[in-house]
Image 1 (cartoon, rainbow, N blue to C red):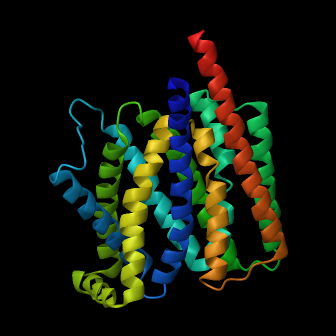
Image 2 (image 1 turned 180 degrees about the vertical axis):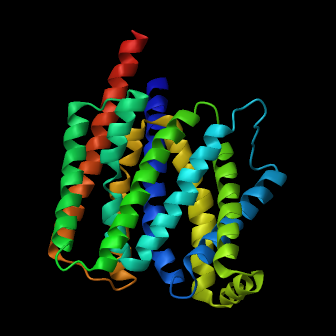
Amino acid sequence: MEGTMQVKQDYKPYLAGATRSIIFGFSFMFIKILLKYLDMFTILSMRFILAAIVLTILYFVGELKVDYKNKDMKGIIFLSILQPVLYFIFESTGLKLISSTEVGIIMALAPVVVIILSIVFLKEVPSKKEIFFIGISISAVLFIAFMNMDGCSNGEFMGYLSILLGMICFSSYNILSRKLSTEFSPTELTFVMTWIGAISFTIISLIYHGNINSFLIGLRSLKNMEVLVSLICLGVVTSVFATLLEHYTLSKITANQSIVFSSLTTVVSILAGVFILGESFHWYEAIGSIVILIGVWGTNYYGHKERLKHAIRENE
């Protein structure tokens, strides 16, 4: 009975990771919608202010526990610079220039960077079977990206470059978050990162607009239901709920196993872009999406088996 309970417990990080990735996949769509009405920095400012307010309310009503006493805050501040500050600037810039489908595809390359970084910094070397299925997933992403490169304009190239830089920031964030999870709880990481994002993007937005009046004009768009719903989905569902799930996942499984869920984000972003935003969808994207899912399944299935074997050897 105890063994059964342990197996169920082991699957919780994977369920959290999958849920987080599905939410992140839809977030590209909501940003794309908001960019029709607002500039990038206003979106980021309002998104993180909303998320910070929600987290603060949860803290004061006792639903969110944080304790930073005698903890080194330098690491979490640097983490916050990587994500949300740099990552979301690059992501939003890319979304202005290319489709949400293409953004999701490029972001799925993150496992390549994470594997390299985790081997160097965390000594987390994946098994051969994990590497094989990660390779399958990455090969599918590269195939889709290659097929989409035909006729690429300068603007689209800058969009690809921005998302690539965002992917590097996101991968580095996964590595550092994994290390910080031994000292900080998921709620402690999320709380600080959200407030730093809110303050940073509001300052950047005010500088971008030149005065507070121009910034406040953007708030009038909240009367538009499409804007309001999209902002709530980004500020509450993504920046609060999904980020908490992300930090929980990183505290329970390796960075290699966590980042592979970015491939699932790719599939969701493609489906959302096609069926909701009406973006184009080609045969090679359909085939690539199926192969990506196979890679996600194989990586996590064999990763779970390897950890069970390791746990059994340690208990013998």
